[in-house]
Length: 354
Image (tube, rainbow, N blue to C red; front, side, top):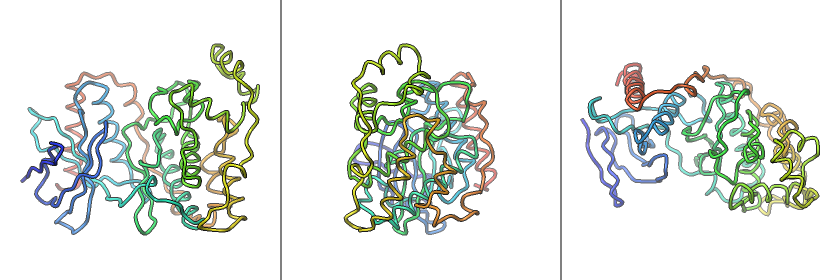
């Protein structure tokens, strides 16, 4: 049995009656999320209604990708899919609802942190990203608003609408990651791999420390300019890997020397610990490297002294079942995507007895 809740902005959620006290907490191009109380177990949950899932085949593929990825995930630092449903039959199927762990806040609202909390959050984010990579998934859209944090300092990675399979033989669209957190290889269109997520993590934690977005570009070109103004003009060896037209553009820009990281990241006011800040600067200096061939990996980051104090093998070494990357090359009609998604929802219900 379902009931309908209409919010002030006209958005309607049609959900099972066990979900009560719904309140809208966020809305965007990928969907809207409300908090709710699950009366069956007394837990708070988040319910995401996917927006325009069947507007076209691109949106339908994205919805199918997000659903199939979430069904795979089982790690404490990655948001868990608790339920998925539609209130409609297949004949009038339009709405997809994902029920997930509730998080109290996101990293963009956490304020300044001391080194103990900061290193613990960084460690958890690296654990979650390593788990995703073990499934063959690059998140591609890591940003402060996509990383949830609870009051006990537990961190969970959110939102897989833009995630893609790891594949080294082809390039992925540069228009996927929120601009400020885009790695140079995305901006320059040279293809990318797992450690694109490491760049995003460096940007996120640099922002937490300074209170400002690290690279606030107005467009792709301005984004690149902001990066080199702070980190310096990249080496000729890196520039030689670029396409000829991009090489010419990069070579004709003004030369910038790198800014020393001690000039970027000062000692935290809330934690006067210069040794810890020195370790953190060193870690960020290895994350925020323009040349992805020189940038550190997730494993290297997890073994860095700043976060290794939290290292637990059962958290770091747990792996996920592999994501079926053939999804990325499927060319289905809208009706075929709809049929696949409806079947995935039914399969989840069958496995979980709902």
